[in-house]
Length: 335
Image (cartoon, rainbow, N blue to C red; front, side):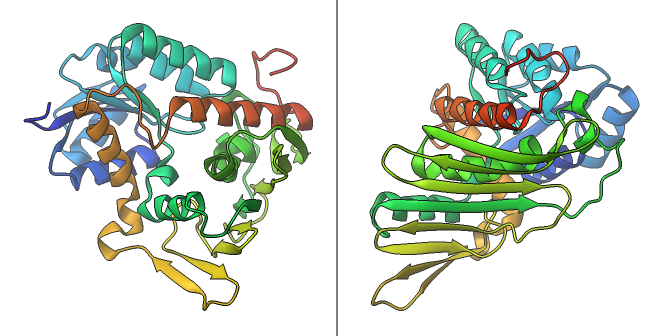
């Protein structure tokens, strides 16, 4: 693999799959060799759009294709356990969209499958691969703002989404939390790790999914994080990290930022701007590049998006859902 292109398969043909395929086209050492959908018609249309040689009308054929080095799973998250599990069991490496699964139990099953079959597995948390987010984390880790005291992050869409939309469908893992809230929760985890305390409130739809959710996370060291997500109101999609000696503000698009501002007492604000070569359109490219780097290095997971961190985020999402009373079909009374 070190001397040739990394061969990708794409499972599903929705909007995020198309964005990822476009990012792979920009990578000179990446090659999309196959795509699969539940229907051959959809797979063929996607293949023609991106010049992909093989199109499958079922997932199993893609999973069995030994010409594929890694599969990108781009289904809605309710299908991640089935799709990623099928690929791992067939010996494929997997990059799986977020939210990684419906719950931590399913996530643990995928981790066990990856280890059983000796395969690479990574959550597609592209935010963690963004060069500016990595720079922000490095500044925080180096003590640029002192000890972290608070993290605030929000992600809301204005909607409205009709009852038939996937975001309001319990069978598809609908609601704001798993689709949008995974970003502010993951942002807090990135900087502080897994919380030791949690409280949450939500407004639920008639179908039983969360229309908007707010959570307060706490850590034994005294740090707090306030996170919010919504599918009934467009928010600033902003984030702020406050420490004992300063603050970092991401004014908009915190999960894929173009800039952030570092404030420290006695100093002028310092703005950090994404390099033009690393623009937002390339963030998925950074994610794909990290997968390919790890595969060529013989790694089974990425240090940027470690599986232990993915599992911790799923536990936090589970606890939030337990607090607000959101459960999906087939889940036990307590997630």
